[in-house]
Image (cartoon, rainbow, N blue to C red; front, side, top):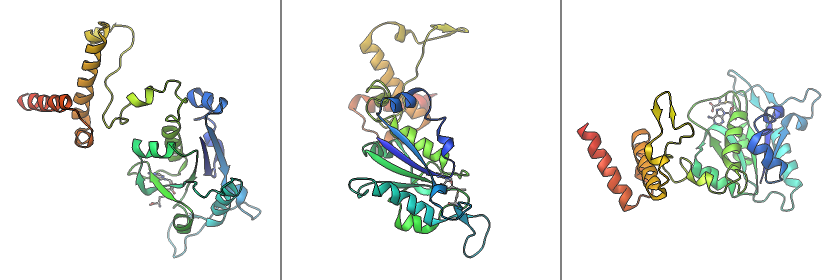
Length: 250
Ligand SMILES: C[S@@+](CC[C@H](N)C(=O)[O-])C[C@H]1O[C@@H](n2cnc3c(N)ncnc32)[C@H](O)[C@@H]1O
């Protein structure tokens, strides 16, 4: 999978994707992260990418021309001229990013992310260039680079082979709509705190049962609203009922 990221700070992407899992996936040719410098598409001698807002007000707005031309350059080099290429603007006004959206994006072989700055981008980018708009949360950051890193990380780790084991992303929190069970590693006792006995028992069926209970318990405690939307079996529903009942008694 390939992700092109339009930014005025392309160097920012070297560190997050230059180590560990992503470095290996890039070296193995599984994924490609391609920062595109928006300034390279500005025609004036200062490579200006922003200007004052029409109507007045504080701050600057990113000009449409370098962004349009950068995206068009990417599309023109593709066989289908980018007919089905998702062009996603990072903006606090977009649809709220989630595991579901990460899965949806990971099924495309190629996506483009646009990072805004200052007061944001000229509205004609939203209306006539971007095919989607994504927010990573209900707060405002100074630029779209951190949101682009968040989206790229969440999407690329779902590409088969990136994590090494195909199983691991499926067990993670949110993949099934619930939170993951607690994890422990050696030593079995640390500062007097014990690892739950069951995990040391070697009883795979009982460990699986314990983990399922923990998934339900943790989700109920931390994010109860997730249980309403989750696909729960009969046994899970019984567990929820029992735990809610125990809670009320406490
Ligand atoms: C300071 S923000 C602009 C906010 C804009 N004036 C508004 O109120 O909607 C500058 C840039 O940071 C990025 N950004 C900030 N917060 C974001 C968020 N929660 N999700 C995605 N992108 C965000 C966007 O690319 C945005 O264009």
